[in-house]
Amino acid sequence: MSTMETTLIDWLHQLGTLEFWEALLEGFEGLGPLVPILLAMVESIFPPLPLIAIVALNIAAHGGFLGFVYSWLGVAAGGTVVFLFWRRVVKRFFWKLASRSERLKKAQQWVSHVDTASLFMLAVLPFTPTSFLHLAFGISDFDEKRYLLTLLTGKAVMVAMMSLFGQSLLSSLKNPVYLILAIAIWAGMYWVSRKFCKKHDLDR
Figure 1 (cartoon, rainbow, N blue to C red):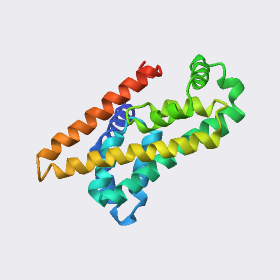
Figure 2: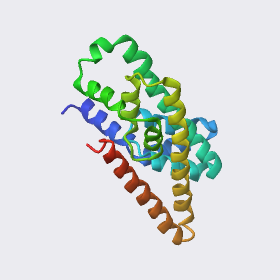
Figure 3: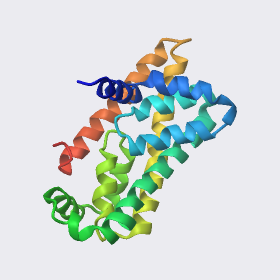
Figure 4: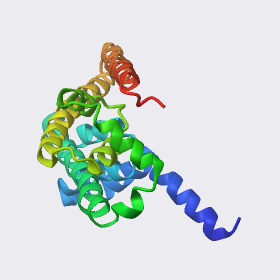
């Protein structure tokens, strides 16, 4: 393996660590809300980033309310960009080529079995593969405005739950009882997410 390949692998590994983003956030603290918003936004484009940790980091750096607002704005912006990429670019200009992919065909067919209420729940649950939702609905004929409105509303609820988790985690530093609450919130979100994803064939 060449030195360049090793360096690239190491760099990609750092991108997936919270320490890297924490150091980045501290380095650009003077830029105000821009960095925490971009940090949450990048998670939509680079899924390996732990969003729940990013929200907790934003809560620690900016407090409960602003941490929630910055995180939600980032998640909303990132999700919108990725969805519109599939809808406005791939589907509009490259669909003849892209439609040859069996994976994309199956994703398009999957959307026909999901109603708005189910989409909202999938957007709310933090362990849903959101990148797949953007792809599947982006290449489908699902109403664009309805998707984005449902997504943004669901993500607001999801980030609020994550903010509560982050706030409980911070409070546990002073009172260990809050650690139990934080763990309970995380476990509850994970359990419900897995059940709902299994119901909609997203656990594979």
